[in-house]
Amino acid sequence: MYLKLFITVLLFLLTSAVDPFEKFAESSTRHTNNWAILVDTSRFWFNYRHVANVLSIYRSVKRLGIPDSNIILMLADDMACNPRNPRPAEIFNNVAEQINVYGDDVEVDYRGYDVTVENFVRILTNRLPDVTPVSKRLLSDESSNIFIYMTGHGGDGFLKFQDNEEISAVELADVIEQMWRKKRYHELFFVVDTCQAATLFEKFYSPNILAVGSSKRGEDSLSHHVDPKIGVYVIDRFTYYALEFLEKLKQDSQKTIDDFFHCCPKHLCISEVAWRTDLFTKRDYRKTLLTDFIGNVRRTEVVLLDRQTLENISLNSTIEKPLDESNVPKQQYAYISQMPIWN
Image (cartoon, rainbow, N blue to C red):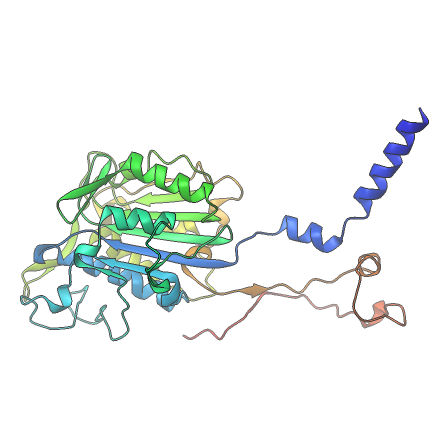
């Protein structure tokens, strides 16, 4: 009886002596960095719009704070240098030619025939050759949120690469499961603009994943408009309205994942946008900020600690006098950006 009492008291003392900072760390998210993988899988001039899709998203992701060092950009064809392009070194996603999405600072990591299913899988699972430079590697860890955007020609449960190979929904699901087991991501946001896009993520089974596609099974994902000067479509409908949504965001935006899901309603997209949230169970996707995946603003929260908490924290410096609560400011504290935000 005395032994049981002693063990009970001992367990109580041990649990009550937990460092309050450890409790705070356990309750807070482990998310510390963001990565983006942007993939165009289509070749040939008539697929100009797929390159414009990816470069448009690339431009928005960079503007919202993710640096090139954390972006893997894969372009299956070089439309900027295509002999059919009347505007060399320029790619536009609108007939008005307002924005050159190729720009002067595009860093393409994989180009042309280097955009393959094998390389894509190797990037995600970190199985690249030892000689691969750091700039071409996904150096994520269990604290990383990863944004994956893919566009090209797809069908029921597959996405074509280079018009001669494909990755299936089952293969993609297994690759992401490998990422999870190897602690390659904290949370993952998967976006795909292709025909029957929803079938590409219906096999996912790993945790902490959000996914959205431009069309459901049996539906085509349609182009938005053609540029008569070059004779091809310049952007797809879903990406056009997604870009319109993203261009309005700032780095401190409070827009959520749910807001992004509804950026292209059926009367605009023609196809019906589909998404999955059942694997994302640790927090409410309706309250999850979009910039948790495609931004890079770190926020600092000022926390007021009471007397008891301060006494339990071992400080390097000695507190010679007790805390004077009258000096504690009473105003409401708010999040502040760690870096300047440009309009």
